[in-house]
Amino acid sequence: MISSFVSQNWVTVIIFFIIALITLLHYLYEDRFIKFVSIINSREYFIDYIDKKKGFISFFNVILFLIQLGIYSLLIYKIKINFEIFNNKVTSFFYILLVLFLFFIGRYLIGRMLSSVFNLQGKQNVLSFIKFTYFSKISIFILPFIIFIYYYPYYNNLLIMINIGIVIIMFVFFYLKILLQNQKMIFSNLFYFILYLCTLEIIPLVYLYKTIF
Image (cartoon, rainbow, N blue to C red; front, top):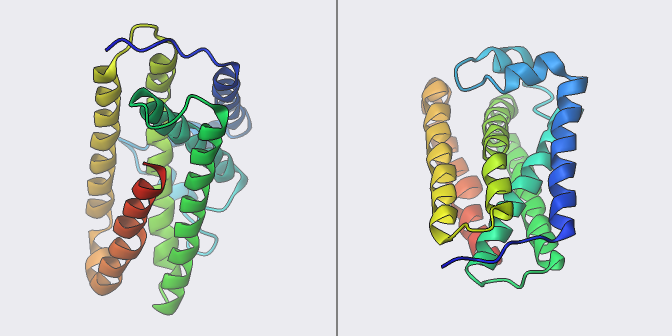
């Protein structure tokens, strides 16, 4: 089925805002940004910027958070309107944005509390930083696909599904990469990791799916 061309001015504004944030990061943190975009084949970024005490709270990562929040919200919004789950309105987009924001912040705070109970704050900070970095990389990688499905006038459901498939494959790839890179830390704290997986990965994702879809 050929869908109509989405031409809302607010979508264009949000996409330009995201691109402006990416440009700002490159301008203010050129060396760090270059290392960030190379994380698939290099660990230099993690070696230089992981801080077990501070975690990943920094201006650079706050901007990255806004970027991935905007991109994932645009993707979910497009999926929902394409399959007629949502009305094509800006309020629907900001509803998704709010839910994702609360999801990410809530999961981060629960992770902090859980790690405090087991006295594993340093390891939790490392794991959170790595996961956040990979997810930010995925969001920037799929931005061209997001722009394509919004502005290409003859896209169809198949292209949407291909885009979803790419995202899922990248998520699985990076999750496996995280497991392999941190297997010593994970297996030495296996009970905590299982609890972490259930509390901060599986249950929140099920809740997120039910809330948005």
